[in-house]
Amino acid sequence: MTEQLGVVTSGTGGVWRVRADDGEEHEAVLRGRLKKADTGRRADGSIRRDTVAAAADIIKLAVGDRVRLERDAPEQTWAIAEILPRRSRLARRAPGGGRGERVIAANLDQVIVMFAAAKPEPHARMLDRFLVIAEANELAARIIINKVELVGEGSARERFASYERIGYPVHYTSVEERIGLDGVAVALAGTVSVVTGPSGVGKSSLLNALFPGLALRVSDISESVNKGRHTTVGAFLHPLPHHVGGAVVDTPGLREIGMWELPARDLDECFPEFRGAREQCRFGDCAHIAEPDCGVRAALSAGEITEARYDSYLRLREEILAPT
Ligand code: GDP
Ligand code: ZN
Image (cartoon, rainbow, N blue to C red; front, top):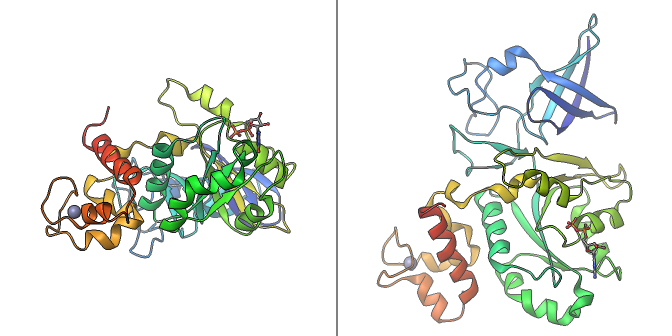
């Protein structure tokens, strides 16, 4: 029997594609005993395989998972014999969600949210939504503002300075004029990043400019395929060239996450600039709307929290409480 370690690059159940550490790609199925095993997690995040499944709806394997492959001599087919412990995940529920949790991708280092300075116009609420999803999954987030040559770099910087003040790194790029590309290359190198954002902002252009031959799926296609349906197109992991290391994960799944999958009471924690202020609220369960002695609203009046971000908080909260 041959053994290999590798990373899952695509698949949503049934047959999975695994890139072995020697660079070979294999198709593999999940071992039957693994499928039946309980994949609940220990406190350290590692996967328990010692007890019988209680919740059949837990998806056991995701793109980005590190696995041990075995090849049986007679059939010469590869099987996934073990899922190695995960260091992080992006799920449709906050970590620890348990039953019904769907893992979109595993072992991510960061979420990169990309918008254009113009064409299409950046959408602050959508940006905040992606940042909240990253925060809820305890993943670092980074912003790219592309097409800066259309408005001038200075004006783009001014517009997004408030995000830099919160602590999010912001890259200002133009694929067209090759501005800021090196900084993005450094941020991607050696890390596993989900790159997301609306279509037409230049995600494929940017990644192809940095890593020719990555063969990214064009986002417009995956989006139109998905339009009006409730199916989820799975994630794809694209390993970056060997000398660079790391990978880019391409998934429409992030766009489909509804805010209602986060508990409303945790939303304020997903706004990093609220964290200090909420300690000052009189009530521990303050929603920061009409309560007396609210630290968040005090910080808003003092200009430490922007109107735009507070407004995003209110609207995302409404989305959670009254899903459409
Ligand atoms: P995606 O949908 O986010 O992957 O975006 P694409 O990479 O397909 O790019 C959408 C359009 O924007 C294409 O016509 C690109 O040529 C164009 N584009 C990409 N980067 C830039 C840029 O820096 N400046 C300008 N003006 N156009 C760009
Ligand atoms: Zn409050």
